[in-house]
Image 1 (cartoon, one colour):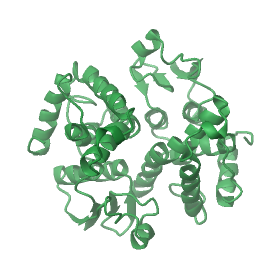
Image 2 (tube, helix red, strand yellow):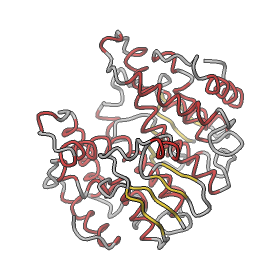
Image 3 (cartoon, helix red, strand yellow):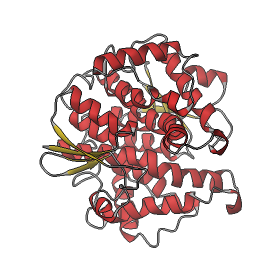
Amino acid sequence: MLTVYGDSASGNCLKVRYVADHVAIPYRWIETSVLARQTRTASFLALNPAGQVPFAILADGRPLSQSAAIMLHLAEGSALIPADPYERAQMFQFMFWEQYSHETAIAVRRYHKHLMGKPDAEIDPGLLPRGNAALALMQGHLATHDYFAGGGLSLADIALVAYTRLAHEGGYDLGPFPAVQAWIGRVEAALGLPAA
Amino acid sequence: MLTVYGDSASGNCLKVRYVADHVAIPYRWIETSVLARQTRTASFLALNPAGQVPFAILADGRPLSQSAAIMLHLAEGSALIPADPYERAQMFQFMFWEQYSHETAIAVRRYHKHLMGKPDAEIDPGLLPRGNAALALMQGHLATHDYFAGGGLSLADIALVAYTRLAHEGGYDLGPFPAVQAWIGRVEAALGLPAA
């Protein structure tokens, strides 16, 4: 059986859980706290030299890290990866954009504010405008599309929804982004998640 | 014909060039300088709201951004994407790791030091140790493997080599990482590149 080392407070880890649940792949979840530095112990670093969760041991015993790579592997052959080459390319475009330009602002600010409990004055002031720029880009796309790649739910939506639905915990206001709010509701419904 | 907006000083843009050349897809290259803010003009932002290069207009006229997404699209059906599912998953693992943990240190420090000409004292002191940690992780993998995913050249090697072969421009010393140096030589030879 698939084993996933994950922190339930981490959107990157929840992405893997959302995909495994959606495609009905059974797994064992080993709760691994980033804040408690359980990803930095010698035994964990021996498993994953990158010292990050999520981290998977596949059913055949082989390791795999990086949330997006694990999602892509679990979703192979499912409708979460569009069959059309251009729609698939758009899925990749938004998955890489999420990791580079969205997660690095929205998830990082949430980590400092919500998980570490830092006051705003101690948080990098660049994170709020950068996160809002990412939300504005999403709003621009979703103003004319229901999903990020093709006409239905794909891994791009799952990758993007994980931290967007928790953006309020990072101090972001989704009020100016109504298409983003509506899309969160669609994706939560498709994944069977309660409203965050 | 494929059109690529790219900055020849940017490793992310060169990745696309390396892949297109390797799989022999013809393209028109439109030199677009990041330093000169040509990615921030109104006309460029109308093409790509993310304001980044590389940016592609595919042969059928449809747009695609994100270097990794463009590489994956151009390389479809080629040996640069391993057919084996686990090797392909490792390719994705290293491509996402590169964008999150390698480029954000090694490429960023090179940008400040080499392209902007900043003195070391004005560059984020965290970038040097973070980049060296990324190089150490690569050294650990390459000590027992010739390539990053499977037994031959893949997109993971192209994604990683682009900035690793220019790391000295960012002030990184590859001396402690001999397996990385040897791998750079292998990948440069496979791509027909002169030593950087």
